[in-house]
Image (cartoon, rainbow, N blue to C red; front, side, top):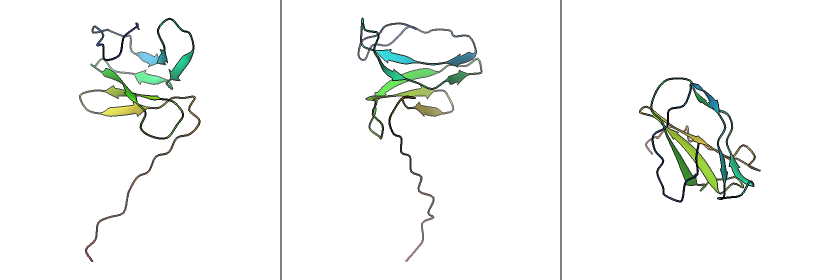
Length: 95
């Protein structure tokens, strides 16, 4: 897809509808720092891919967000040592 510096925006790119795996390396290096799982681009729509610091569980320093006009999906490193997610499904109640 390209090489980009920290906080640099890419030009708009048109991709074929397919599944893609994204890799992050340091400039000029082949060592993979982040490898996503297969990310589907099944529809002709605009998406923004965002690289963020990983603030959650896992050994990768990065996570990748796929942002569309209707959703944001976070992708963690497919090679990460651990993942942890929690969901609070307890309804509020009065005491």
